[in-house]
Length: 319
Image (cartoon, rainbow, N blue to C red; front, side, top):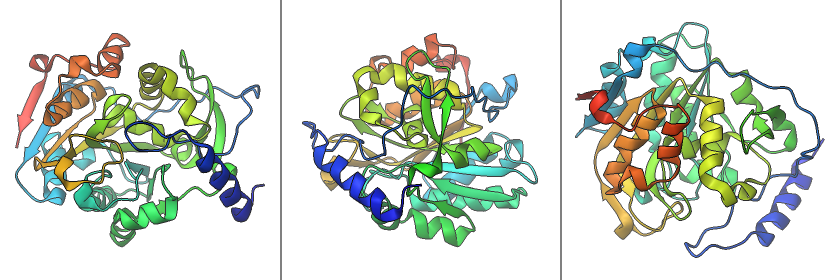
C-alpha cells in the first residue's frame, strides 16, 4: 500500500519529468504506474438510461445565476427525479483539473456543483460523491476552485485520491483503452453525473463532456494523448453518464485547458444538458465559437454510435 508521503514523492518526481506543451501546461503524468500485463475483469457500468424520448432532448438554459441555470436545464429534461432515485449512490464529476479560481474558467463553476448535489439529495440519493483526478496539486486545486467547500456545504462527500489503492484495474473494452485503472467511487456508483466546463484544449481543440471523463482514470494519461480522439471516445463508450450538464457560464476561448488570463474568458451565462453525449458536446462547443465537425472526437463519437451531431433531429428546449 502506498503511503501518503510515498505518493507525494512519486507524484513530485513525475511532475518534474512531465513534458511541457506549447500551450503552457503539463501533461497529466502524476499518477502511479500500473502494470498493463495484469489481467482485469470487464466492468459494465450501468449509468445510462435507455429512454428514446429523453435521448431526444437537449436543454439550453440561459441568463440566470449558475446554480439556477443547472436547475432550469434539468427541470426542462423532466427534473432530477428522471435521473436519480431514492437510495442511489451518485457520483458528480466536475472538471477540477487546475489550480484556478472560478473567474478563470478552467474548472466547473462551484455553485453549479453545489446545486446538483442538493438536487440529488432532494431526490433521495443515499450518498453524493464529488471527485476528479486533478492535473495540479489535488488538495490545492479542490480548495482554490471553490468546489470542495461548495460541495461539502451542500452535503456531498469530496473524494480526493491519494494513492493507487483508490483505483481498480478494469477492462474498459475499448479499441485503444483496454486494461486501465479506474477510480473506485466511479465503479461503486449507481449514477454518474458528468459536469464539465466548456473550454479550449491545446490537443483536442475543445474539452467538454466526453473529454472530462479523463478524470475518472489514473495511470499515465499522457500516453493517451498520442491518439487522443479515440481515447476520449473509448472512455465515453465505457462510462455513458446518467446525465451531462455542461457549464457554459464562463468559457475559455484560448490557452486551454489551464488558462489563467481573464482576457481568454467569455461570459455566456448558459448551461447545456442532456443524456446524448455527442449532442451536448455539439451544442456546447458552439459557445466556444468552434465548428463541432472540426473537433475530432465529436464526429468519431457519432460514428461509434454514442449519439448524434444533427441537432435538427433533437428536441432543443430553450429555457
